[in-house]
Image 1 (tube, rainbow, N blue to C red):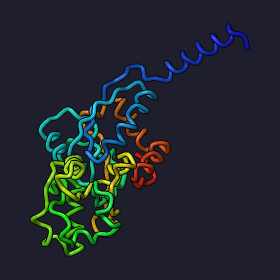
Image 2: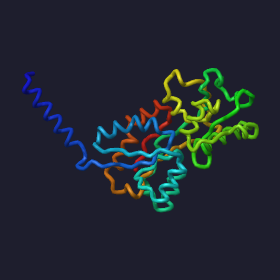
Image 3: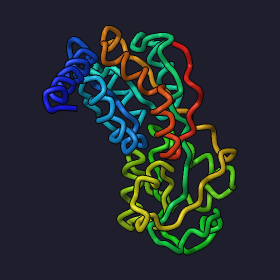
Image 4: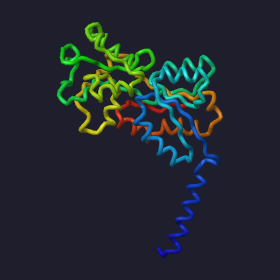
Length: 259
């Protein structure tokens, strides 16, 4: 193939890529649950490159993000860490009925930055070998609520209650544990998988029958109802490629649901 033909083919390919992009690139504002931070940061450039749209996320506990939406925060999509707040937004007229779907099912893990502290079970929780146990605020963070349910199911809540330190969200619970301010922490499995192997310490993957399922729901908000970018992102989130990537991050991913 001569050089002139190669140049022509490259030009044609570039033109096709431009035509494949939306007529008007948009900035999409998303409220994203803290546990999903690392996965989102990997997904974002793929979506942006494929569509030309730009993502502007705000990360936090689901309860706090919900409160911000109720107070008028200009989000167009909520990626919650539960399947309750989306329904509340629909009931209050702030969410688009029929747009909600489960994009991931999260897993809870008991973790220590110390490599030998957690022996692959919950036995450490019944010992005197720790002073602090970090959790996310159970009133605003679904992973924090799952941590409390786990402790109650194991009949250990009363014995560790005075050792609990609460982060505002699951990211802060990770920070407390990573820094050593708490020897143990209940964090998201996806957060642990995002750490370099040398920093993963020791952990116990909490059996799913010890707490309510952490069904993470996406919902289109009224402010994004006419947004081409919002619709495109929700489709992207349910694509086979995205679902395969989320499995690598430790999330279960239900089959894509028609909307």
